[in-house]
Structures are given as C-alpha cells and as structure tokens.
Image (cartoon, rainbow, N blue to C red; front, top):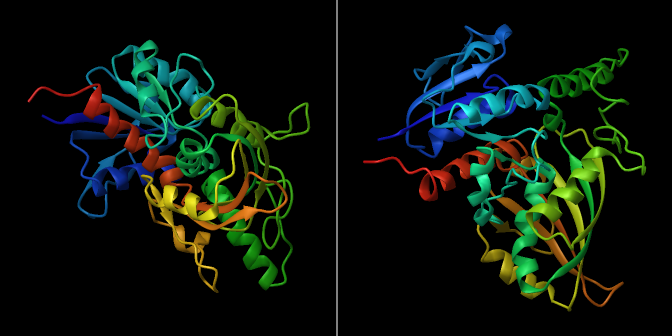
Length: 343
C-alpha cells in the first residue's frame, strides 16, 4: 500500500524538481497531487520524465489535506505559514522547504545524512523543516569531519547561483547577458545590482549586526543541525551561475587532522563525492554538479596559518540536494522509520 503525497508549490523550480525526483527514486506513492496558487490552478505539470505522466494543478486555497500522508511544501514562507499548519492539523505530515519553521524549537530541521535521529520530534507539530540550500551542502560535508575531530569554527564564503532566487531571477540573468552582448540597456528587478558578469555580496535582507539573513541562516541552522557549539562566520555572494552553489570553507578543529584523513572520512560518508586532484580540471564546478545528487568536495588542504585547520571547496546542485532531493530524502526516512503503511 503506497502513500498519498501532495506537492505544494508544484509549478516553481523546486516543486517541479520534487516531482521529477519522486519519479526518479520510485517513491512509493499511490497518488500525487500538484498544488499551487489559484493563478496556476488548472495548469498541467509533468510528473517525472514521461510526457504521459501529467498532473492538473489544484488550488491550494481550497485543497483538502485530509487523507493525504505527506505534504512536500515549497510555496514561499508566507504561504507555508498559513497552509502548512492547516495541512498538519489535517493529519498530513509536512516537509517544508521554506524558512518559516526552521528555527522553531518544536520543528526538526533535518538533513538525513547528518541528523536523522532528530526526526523523532516531528509529532510535536507534524511539520519538518528543510534547511537553507547553502547550509545543507555544507553540513553534509562537515558531519564526517566533525565526527573525526570536533569542529570549533567555520569561515565560509558561498557563491550562490541565481536559481536560488527563483525563475524570475534566472530570467533576469539571461536577459541581462543578452542585453550586454546586444549592446542594449541592462535593466534589473530581481537583484540590487546587475547580476550578469558581476558578483553581489548581498543575499536576503541586512540585519542589525551587518550580516545578511542568508549569512545568519548558515550560522544558526548549522548549530541546530550539527552542533550548537560550532561558530560560523559566513559571507554569501550571488554570482552569475544558473544552477549550483559553491562554497569556500575554512575549518578550525580542536585537534589537528591531515588532508588525507579528511579525504578518507569524506569518501566514506553518505551523500559526499570527493573529486580532489591537484591538476587542471581536478575539481568540481557548478557546471558539472547541475542535475547531480551528491555534495562534491574538492581542493582539500591543510591550512598552514593555524595548527588545526583545513580548507576545502564544496559544490552542489541547489535545486536538488539543496532543496528538492533533501525534502524527498526526509520523506523516505519518515516512511522507513515513522509512518509505515500497513501491507
């Protein structure tokens, strides 16, 4: 007996990716509903790669979650704030990809390779939070190293693709690039500055301490998921890449570990692929990670400026592991351990 799964925000970048991944991973669903805002109701979205598998989008405002087992939500924080609790109260377990519930103490914040045991707390609100895309790929790589030698401090610069800001942001990069080549005026609506051929050190709103909210998320989410004692200093930059976030990460441990020890631990870790050859093309870039599931780690090296430091380069598809794939993996973990169907 399979599960009934509602994909909320099904017409967005992440929602479409969730539908594709559910099909690719042969998720045991008897029924899948595509749900979105009223303006998308009646549209058709494809489920998986088969052109014949199509779903008619249903209106979120009137959708009845009673009898649905799982709700994979990615409609935006304000929408999730209203409809995720409504779904949870109807008995549908919500995996929410927005920022709304991540720091709620009664809502587990989950990366299955890192803290699956925290899923046990989902019954408090019937909601599970999917972390920020930048945080997910970093903690997947940090977990095996933290198990090897306790991490004290992380300094990270993230280079975030425009897909993290949605379809309109991707279109803006395309149009600005076209305008520059055509010698036409460049217009901007989605970003604070021109994104084409540029780098913008500003993602989300500025906070009182001078950090942006994206940088704050990387700190507090890492502490909630991995260890509250880890200090994190992040600088998050939007770059003219369509898909794939990159991170330059510097780690300080409580005891020294070598680069070779780090490589060995990372190679044995779930969800991690080590591609680390000190030659031309011996590392992974966003171009290679797009459409792929793993978190790729390259450029692993000992930091000679301190006795207990390592530096590394981390790349992952932000729409897959950074969002949709992680949500589906949470659902897979749930049905294995918590909400099994009777045969």
